Image (cartoon, rainbow, N blue to C red; front, side, top):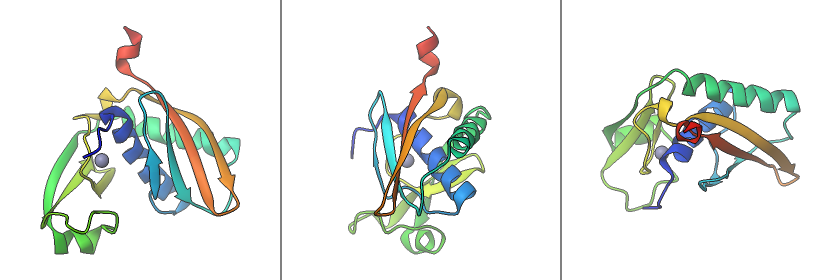
Length: 150
Ligand SMILES: [Zn+2]
């Protein structure tokens, strides 16, 4: 398993669901998470306006501020396949699939490490986005973590 940064990775879940909700696109097909800054790539057909970038940031932070519990549930592979896109899971994935939920806001299959509550993530900062003409929208973001205030 990758050594995820649980705060960044939980923020990634919320960003993905926000993109699904706001633009009707699929969750990121690729992501690169680092402690200082992260990026997620989406299939999309245009760049985002500055207003849209701000809207994405606001929506992500709205969810973070709700102090939502992050929990795991287990589903059989066939049940999971009916409700979720499990194409990104390894072929040899276990028969039981772990579904990670963030309150009622989000649910998706994931093997990564997460925080227990969105209050632990801090604040989501939209860095920038760019669109390349191959249909890939890249979003770069950072976190202002609760521990940064100390
Ligand atoms: Zn995850």
